[in-house]
Length: 486
Image 1 (cartoon, rainbow, N blue to C red):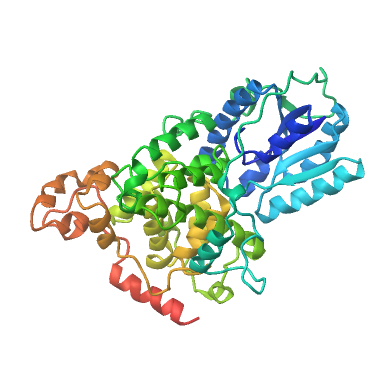
Image 2 (cartoon, rainbow, N blue to C red; image 1 turned 60 degrees about the vertical axis):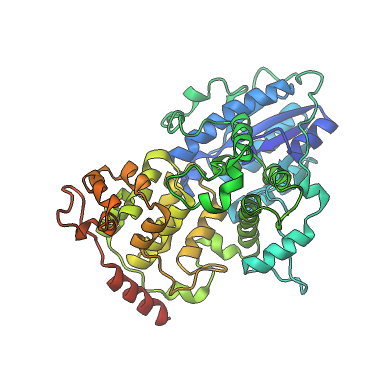
């Protein structure tokens, strides 16, 4: 008997662990629900609700392969070694297969699992699939890891082999479902088919943001096909326009593993007439974003201190971050008085997702304008995002705060008004999320257009909308002084 341990890889296509287990067969699948551990990592209800929906969909997909899915309650990662050992003993499994994971705690957990299973003569096999090219595959000539993205991308493209370009097909079904015990002594079995997951985990609303983010690999494939049908062509420019559906909307599915990076890359190459990075602007730009995703995964492996709430650049640990609970709350709730920032934060709170351009604007506003510790923002995003992914979220926040790898120079500070004028020129996105500014909409058609984006400067500022909690010029000077003093 072989066990497939699913984690952030809830799919049946391009899944090396599932393919290997079914080839050796018979196989069963297991998922460990580590609610306490995830909450300690700031994973919030939107992500957990999406996970439940994806699990239900995944169970149905596995059923078509005659693979039963067992869900065990394993509150913390430290529970995993013993629970998996008991499971293997109970069903007579000789091997546990899984897709590699990269954050530090996950790698420590996997090492403990390998040691515990080995004590019982059970093999633990980790397979590639957590990145297009795994950490260690893209290194400098001297063997050191990259810390700057552009040379990393060049080497990544040079190292990309045919196997990494070609997703594995969905494996054939095994002849019949393995016969499993009726009783599960000493195992905290939640369900053996996921049909009762909606009742199994009290306190998690499985329908949270469900209309925005239906769960499962079939939905991921549908969105991927829609993106390829035309959206990808204008991606290079439209992805920055807040009011346009110019992004792939695939980040939740990539983060939960309902869609693999390799599958996404194969589609992009196809849309790029078989070329990797030197083709049409849209597909080439999206491929670059997939490379960024790999880059941040490599960073957290090669520089584990970033998994410990530390800045990548040691000197930036000395930035004199401020403590201002009222300013932090205003930022979190979209009450800063800067329309583009407030619209972005309200989109996050209202949908569990935020447009990537807005993520940069909002992150830089917190870390530069308010001079609040970027880790507070990183935590808030993880608590609110459906696509909360440690490597990408940490990398993005450290980039914006000028503390990370290849980070934006500390003296580059986005002007929220300029960003709004450039990436929401008609105010469409802002008016969607900040309806208090509707009264200023006529200004968008005239010479006083700027007053819509700086409502405090209007002759009649809108009632109910706050004045700015910080002055842009003064905030910029304060941030520059803080970083220059390191």
